[in-house]
Length: 389
Image 1 (cartoon, rainbow, N blue to C red):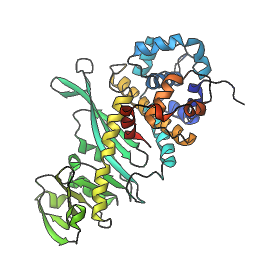
Image 2 (image 1 turned 45 degrees about the vertical axis):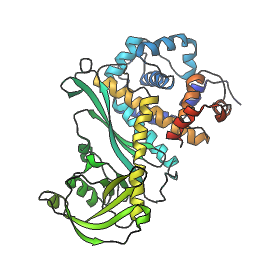
Image 3 (image 1 turned 60 degrees about the vertical axis):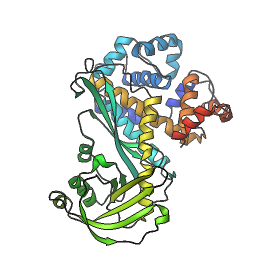
Image 4 (image 1 turned 45 degrees about the horizontal axis):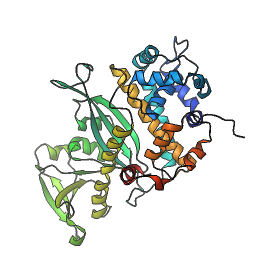
């Protein structure tokens, strides 16, 4: 029988609490903590994300009003601005980074059979990075340019469900291609990247790990053709070739043959040159895979619009990373809830409903069943299509 619990408490039931406690113990998050535990901190940060709070003061003010209800969502500590600020500054951000990995593994299994527009058995990832601007005077540790600060969010997005499988947060000075040194390639998977990741030594390491890559060639790309395959120019293909690199350094960095595909897009009137180490897939499928890379761009756009990762509640590196990882955890948790409850609404719509119903005493499934998609206006419908998975 329904026991009259808040929607917020029911949402947190989907959090693997045992795994969360293991993450806390791994980094001694509750060491010398008397009243405000890591779980209390997680609830505060989740509340801030789900209700679109703009600042720490804003978050604490709202939680103070809801003080009689906080015990019923599992919060045992007293919330104050100084206590939450200290927790974000001093407690290891890796607690929430590890929690995100736990949720990502769960989400990956749930979305393993999702369609992303290309019929393939392989796991397909899109790799890219996005810069989050910061004020250098407030965030001196995040130096980007002479008078500008920034952090960079390097993300490997699983296109089946748009779930971020790998995230690395660095300062803005780290070049995108360097993240390939951290990434461990998964044999048999396909990694779709733009021209910023063209480094033939690193691509060859990925090739030796039996992973496939699809990327665009730079304008100064030099090669010699070995073989040309027949193509149908009505599909937009212009050539499908086996080539070897002829540059002095590139041929040493990548000594194996590579596949070069030229595709002309009539809609944009642009000519694309793709490079890949996959010689099995049809050339048109390679072009479609690169087109699907746009999903990672939409992911960055989406999280910047709908998660609190542009205005930060603290200025230290630990506080910034804690907030970003908390946002990722909330994002993946809601994606898990969507799948487990069989919800038809988009992730955007689910977050909007949660933002106004967290402290309602109703079954969580009923909260979403009351929503009618036909009431949305045209603008929001277009926006929802970005992440309708």
